[in-house]
Image (tube, rainbow, N blue to C red; front, side):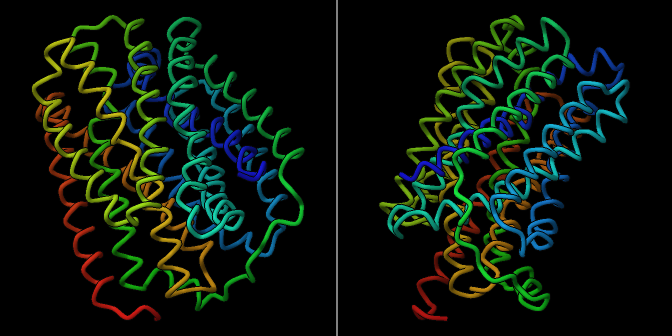
Length: 390
């Protein structure tokens, strides 16, 4: 694979750490800032909304910019956002810093996906995206557990300072490794961009992405309280379990990319969404037993992010077919859809915790994922009915 892919992976690692580390710090931040668990959980939702806005809007606005300079600008914004989070004196300022960081995240994964697919042959597109998104999964393996440990030991602000340092390393890596002459599509006109947000086939995939990811984050946002309050693990053990979960996610992400290359995106998504729903239903019961909970966590990790390569390459393929002038924007909207799912799942999870209790989160997440499976079936049926060319 081209070395530029690994530069993208390095940046994805830093961005993934700041996105997901908040999951391990929800109880710590809630206690320190004197807010409720659902309020601390909103920091996940608000970051995701920043991504959802940044991905399509800023991708469109920077369409004429050199791709490398866009990447470097994004990593600079990412560093600034995390420094502001480190300095945040209260909940409102931390919220603002999270939204700002999310703006950088959205554009990065939007243009990163199209860059990744442009660097490889057609039959390697899903694997290329999987390699880039491996940065996210490696962040789950190492960045999130380490960030959680730092936050629990030295205070949550220290975690954001550490992430800012990671961003600086990624900025240097991008400057050195990413070529200047990256392939760049002609900027889309306003009418072409509007077509991307109105085409029914693309809207269907965005819905698959948002709902499928939302089901996972309904439960994942409150994984730390579940493991501490329901299963009975100590905070230090939770950091270790997040490491175990991250290893499983890293494996599942690569497996999901290869599966999408071999079977096609929709066939791979049948398997992944189906397995994810089953494991979320199982967590409803297994969380009460430490051994069963760890086993469930391992399997959950393998399925939780395995859908990312398939969903992203699917939307790129459909955009190339139906809106070929706006593939970058379509990719950005799918990144927005991922994060609308994260925001919606975290928001719904907060209401479930308040009104129904922690252990209603997994089965509700499973029902949501089944809805994504149904939408995948509908999209696949439409693929089979429509001609090979638009």
